[in-house]
Length: 153
Image (tube, rainbow, N blue to C red; front, side, top):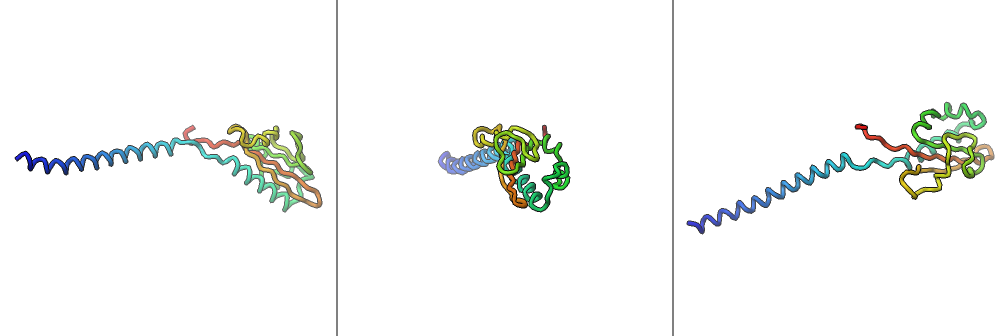
């Protein structure tokens, strides 16, 4: 009678292996879901700088507003205080922006950090472009240090 009993135990042992495998899969799913939810933030500083640079470049191309600096923000649909608080740096120079000198339109300071690309995560991401308007060349430097925030903070 004991030999017939052994044949039935093999099937239950096989089900135990399947059960443990399913428990392992569920535990792995919980760990992966928790990691994805509480994981690292998104890196969008370069994208922010690219989009803002493009917007300024298009605004300068379509409008002649550089002589009246005060109307630049209004015509381009930008708010200087919001840009400063969010961590954006903008420098528009006639010719080439050299060093840390402010240009015609400048938000923020210390544009030398744009040379530190890839040196560390604490530095802003920069985008540099140029536009020609009525025979004059202008360089646009936009840096973004805006770090994404979590909803729970």
